[in-house]
Length: 636
Image 1 (tube, one colour):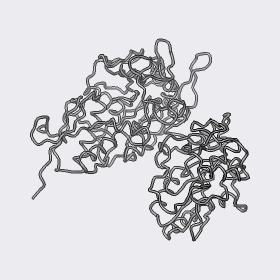
Image 2 (cartoon, rainbow, N blue to C red):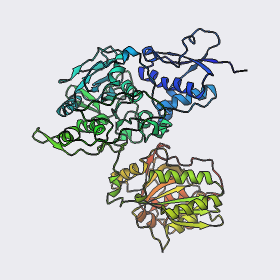
Image 3 (tube, one colour):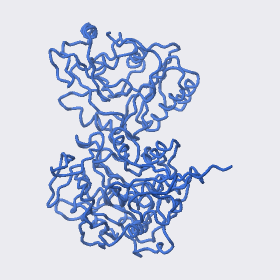
Image 4 (tube, rainbow, N blue to C red):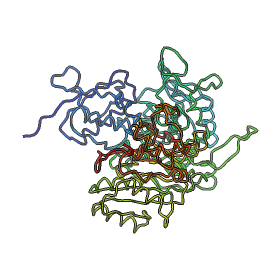
């Protein structure tokens, strides 16, 4: 006998913006894909027009019908988790379904789902164009870029023969200003018309907003002016975003322009501030900038019109779009599996100059053609990057990277090493492994990596010699000395799979902060620990102790201090000359408490630990349950 069909109603109604409803369309589609015939699905949301012609909805499942299970698909918990995690909004919505039903719902396609009737297939505008949404919601002015810069982008595209159409709302909750030289449809399109407009456009330029989600659902190019308000992985439709669940299935990745990491107020994650001037709302931007008649957040002000134009034109350069003089490739039905982007188009000489370079403003104000910079080059934490920061003299080209593996945990070892190899290019890494009592499977894998040239050295120990004696041996190998200015340390339970550009971000942070008066020489998740009397005595007996007083919990040295500040031992980066000068690690340390004492060793030499991570937003340290040897902390 077949199982009865369960009626469920997905609810996301309170203050639900159209983008939220569009995200839920992906959940409804994937329920039908993962559990065909098991659920009758209805929705209780705003933006009902987005659900028109949806084949996965049952119109009989509604509020008031007997036996319907109501699922509250709130996203507040996802936003709170996004401060420290790496989950995309769509993946969170899928996980929320699993949390409420107890049944897993994997993301099948990492974008929303919208359907058109036959009479809607005709284009609203017969020619080719880009759509610009030059404004945003009135209750979130921190998401709105400067109007004058929107105008410059429209001019730059117009100089390349690319038509620009404006769209957006004009009700009390939205503000969109008019731009010259564009076809102005502001206030003249409803949700369905907006979808048709984006579906047939070459691309979209907008803030983090409904048009961004719509462009992803319709597989259209999109340049997103994100700034530093929200974590990029919560919003970005890019293949580097593992938080999407299956980012490789994106047909047309976006160009997501964010500035996370450039300012103190968004150093590690988004600030989530909504207002620009103080008032009843306490969620006020910390660095507002006055520009002509408009106030904008500094994180958005860092994005230039040339960057936006470069990002838009890059879609012609990589073959996603045909040149403006040729017919645009038609919209394709979002079939599964996704179609790969078109091969690069070789432009004829007459159009190559018109389709690719970005115009920059000369000091005299005249326009001059210039070779385009790599997309997002100005943003410190770009989604697209050339890795040039590794060649900075302070970094020296690559990191000497040490990983210590222990025991019969092959799956964990493989996960750790594979993530490292996938995110740290071979030419940027001298990988050296240490092992204690390692299982046969992991030994074989290390041999494979050595044979392929990815691992340069393996310090193998048949018995468990503990963590810090092996570390000291690897750092001071006279036959194979460390030749790079910086080294990385990873325990085998550390995963560098949360941000594909973690190593570049680390290098940029080192370059930006190395010369500060604090003399930062180690980077990691900074913490503090109170010393016992025996730990104080243990430290004072060491040859590296210079008589500097301990610190308080805030890091201030004081005669009565009892704290040391250190980087979590599962992952850190250190300046090699400073590390060796501090005699790290102390030869007396065994297995536990070494990270605490390393922090004091640095401090005694006049160095500090830079707080590179607040949580696990960049590197997932201690990603597995503690295992192996336990002993008293060093000095106790």
